[in-house]
Image (cartoon, rainbow, N blue to C red; front, side):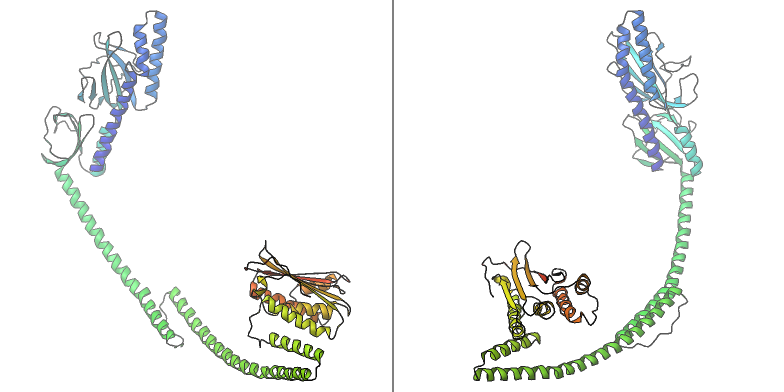
Length: 531
């Protein structure tokens, strides 16, 4: 009821607001009234004719802009004549015959009534406005707009199966308009306190308008309470049915969901305690049955994994025993080399002493006997020891260009320089070749550059492709490729994608291997050369 009353009240207020806006345009200060004032002041017939057409055109334009507007005109009370109407007027029109609702001395609002247009039977609301032009003449503006309050009340009564009544009261509470004049006639005074209540067997609500009138919507109390009781009964029935449906749903959830989930929870606790026996349980729900089958498969997989872990643990223990056994021979070899070393010292065999010391250092580092962490400086030390050993066998020249600095103490991957030098000495160079090793920091890139170059026989394109890749090697290239593959694997394992190794070679033009290692240390600018 409140919603319906608000709709009707807002519609009437909008109609009156539109009419008020139109009358403002027709005052002497408005866009239409300006031409009317000029028309009254004009003396020439042609000028008055032109202004008359302009006024009629302007009135037609503002009426056309609002589809609900019907009759618009000026009225001359002194002469009781109409001027500038947009539509034909009824013959018996008078201002006093208009049903007054509310207003001021200047503006008056009329209740819904039949249109004053001769060819229209629509229900309209209207507004009149008293104005005075510059020549002192007093005119009245009349505008009306179509309204559907009567048809809305009939539709509302039919839909709600109740006889709704709409009343419009003036400021004194006098009925100015009623859709049921037999019960609430025009001119009768109705006392309604508050915004809603009951009176004379009717339930009512009212809304106060800003235009000075009050809109009241009434419905017979008997019909209202009958409808209310009907709604209550329907709500009770719907609530009962909803409660019954919810109970059935709860029962189905208990049977189809809760019980399988409870069984599943018990099985998970059993798995946590180590019980891996398969569960033969069927719920009748395809999804749950498939879930239990998958759970049984998972338990079997867990059993297989437990057995696999046990086998791997047993194998690891066996490998540790084998490792201890394999460490016996290198340990014996290093002790033997130490004995040879001291024997050479005792007999003043410096070359033998040097070679044995270098070899002992190599074995200790490569076999992991040295507890020292691998740095670039220790890698260079091992490389020098390896070169010393190889010089006893091959007649080659080694040149080392190493820039001194704190970066030499940066941790690096273990055993990455010797395999490259071994490839160059054993597979690349001739007996009288030259090996160059250049190590320096690149401060702009925060990297360390290691370049190992020989002037040997080099490699053709096919061999270079095999060495650069990670494929398996045939017997001809196995010796050369394994060392480089090891270095590449160590770089990837230690640095990930931050380190690179590039190989450049030409047949009979030597080979150059370049390592680019990341460095977070502050690099020194002091150059130093070891050879």
